Amino acid sequence: MTIKYPDGTVLNELLSRGNDTLSVSASAAIIRALQGAGQGPVDRLPEKRTIGIYGVFVYLQLLDLLTTLLGFRLGAAEASPFIRLLMHAGPATGVIASKVLALGLGAICVYVNKSHVIRWISYWYGALVIWNLVVML
Image (cartoon, rainbow, N blue to C red; front, side, top):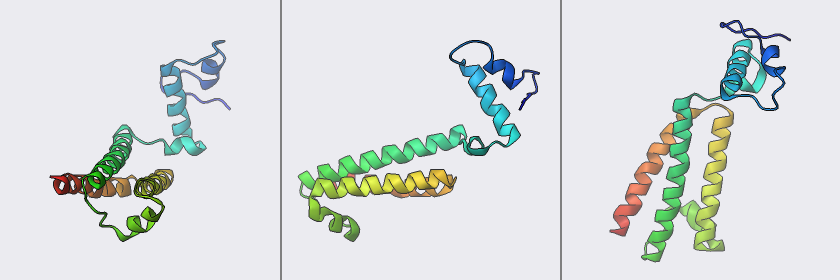
């Protein structure tokens, strides 16, 4: 299969240049070519803006974990019945398990290309981190 892009470069030429590694521009060109050709999972590569949303989601999970554990040390109690159920194995274990579950659900959203769900959940976790900080004050 030969894939040609607008600048005239052919994918086969990029792959047969004799280098063991492709340059960043060659890799990007291959991705662009495959996206244009509608080839499988490359079609699901997220945009740069979407990657930022995923990063915010992961950082908010980390902040929620840290502020929750710090809140426990300062005497705060967990408000969520589900997390309290997980905490029967121990406070830190329960909160970490909930974060693993949240990140797993986030990964499913990424896989099925539902970045809008990650965006809305990030608003919720942002408010939750602020709530944790207010409770600690």
